[in-house]
Image (cartoon, rainbow, N blue to C red; front, side):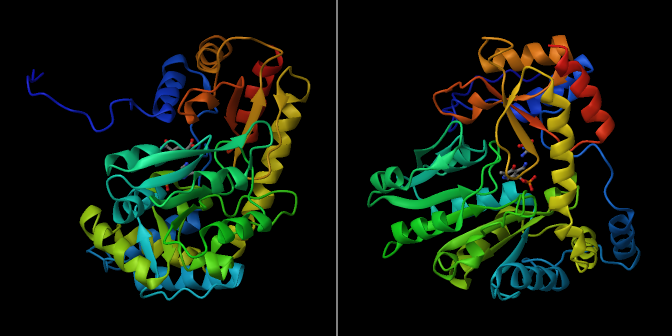
Length: 385
Ligand code: PMP
Ligand code: GLN
């Protein structure tokens, strides 16, 4: 140990360890079934490993270009054109990142100055506000209200100020599983028209939308696309959250600023994984099949809980299911999540952690990106409560 007497004026005085790390560790310590942190407990496709291994064997092991290997950027450009009718230039408008978290942090660092305001929607994914605060920005909170978690654009309009520099949206939404509709994008476009507001669109669950809904990407909306940084993650799409690889789309002027920070933040992302993903994603059925794959898991998990006392909320996308536990307990949700992990052997995420004031609707989040055997074992424990 190295005792230190220097005075540290923390930039993030209220931030501790992320809830995902805390709950996954508690799950491991208790031997509980881990439905807390969002990651699959099944293996990715061996074809992806083969492609990556081939890239290593072929000597693709040195620094790639700063923005990403050309074959991956061109595969992304083709996917985005096919799905969203959007024309992003692979050279100047697409950058490969070390996952979405880095992309989000880099985008915020590139555009938000000290004193700038950034509108976020609560419940808010846990990385946004610390990133804003690290660079001296001021988070401004709009609400996605329980239980439908729909945005209220009149409220957002009222929150706009001359200092609003950025609005961060997330669809499909973690933790609520709600989606933005085409009308929402129209509202957002109208709100930001004639301003210099940058939209940061976290679309990491773009391929996980259910009940025949369509993912409304800001990339598909030309007016919004011109002011937006769109973020996606291969971790979610190809079951490789530990590879930490994703990408950003943005109009070239925005992308030029993004890259100024990116090149000194990570410089570039590991080469063989980029080459492997580039080859793998050329078969579009691999990402297009994801919605049906997870819809099946959603149904399976909901069926497991049907005879339980949890009340399931609507889940339109992502691999997260929210549930109210009011009929089981009146404990605050953090306490309930800890108790559930220790006593019932199922780890979950308390949703109050996604609110600045700890608002607690007595709702927890289950991750159903798990094998059916895992979901069935959890179901048995949860029905017993
Ligand atoms: N945004 C959202 C909404 C997420 O759920 C996650 C990860 N679960 C991320 C960003 C981060 O993605 P990555 O693991 O690629 O950094
Ligand atoms: N985004 C994942 C989740 O919501 C976790 C990622 C992380 O642990 N930072 O569970």
